[in-house]
Image (tube, rainbow, N blue to C red; front, side):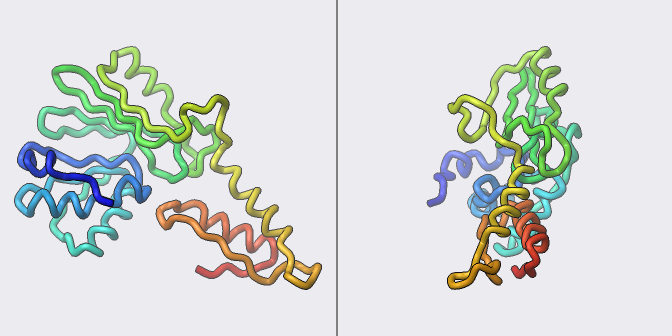
Length: 214
């Protein structure tokens, strides 16, 4: 199922940029289809973190979209796009290189969080820039667009870094169908854009005395 791009297609010449918050498939998967809908003459520049941009570059190559201007921006970096001053802010998520986006124009600032959680031990070792978020709050935010899975559930989500130790425990417990010895083969599956988890799977298999194959 693809989104209806009619609204954007009708305003293709007014689109100054596409800004990506992170590289998960549900956030970048439709980009090739969007760019093709906008037409060759109206393709805007695409901005995102270094990892996100390289993941998108591979996706655009698959679709033979070669003339798209891709621009990697570091968290905290500012740039202009039409009437907007744009800043990316480091956030924590289950993939490295996740950012929020603050867009400021004469009317005020819109803050788009992207997917996030406040993880003190994130997968890339860099927590969310809470200080900058607080500063933006003090300056005044006109619109906040927040995106966080299970935000309506009370409590605190466990750190993404806890996944690795749990995999080690699971692999260590795996036994063969007719033997008390460890099973020689285990299988795991995850989205290809969930970059840390294949690495943890490989490390956990090594820890349990198994070889990893992809």
